[in-house]
Image 1 (cartoon, one colour):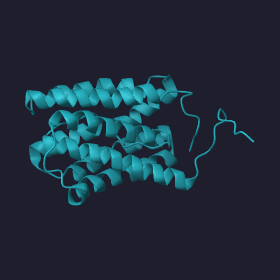
Image 2 (image 1 turned 180 degrees about the vertical axis):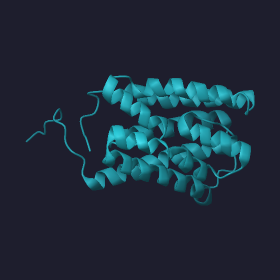
Image 3 (image 1 turned 45 degrees about the vertical axis):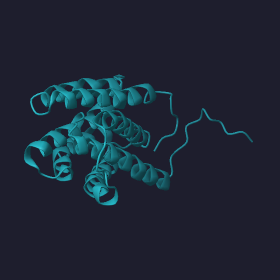
Image 4 (image 1 turned 120 degrees about the vertical axis):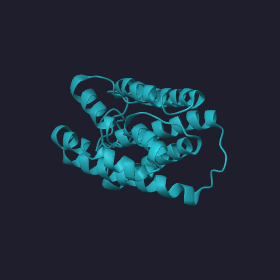
Length: 205
């Protein structure tokens, strides 16, 4: 019997867990590429990277702390299941970004390659999390809320916020690093904007 691909099916718990692990690992690998060549991105990850460059505080600690206020919105607007999964994903990204350099020696990477591929990795990882009703916190929570309740595309909204964060990078990073960061942000948000929209994926958690 041919399955009805148009009928939504609920993700099983093990599918959500696997998606969270793979998604956060992809996001973390992209962030490690960025940190290696002093690039930044948008949302709370971009803020954490900029603060990391300025203070030398580990990215994972900053990323985890910056996301804490957004859980209030997540609980009020998105519900406890989403909040719990997002809290877990933020914790995983904080953990993975601190340990990937121990598992993978990235001694040299071209900054343009890091920007494009790192942005792609983060975009695919975030898309995977979105489809399993999770995120990596921060602006992602607000973007998902606006899309679910007002029809504003999550990717396009986040692109605007990311642009503001990248403007701040002009005061911290060299010009070429800002340009590569902008290209990476475009890749990330194009992936989400083209793929995360109503009707494109029918599975749910």
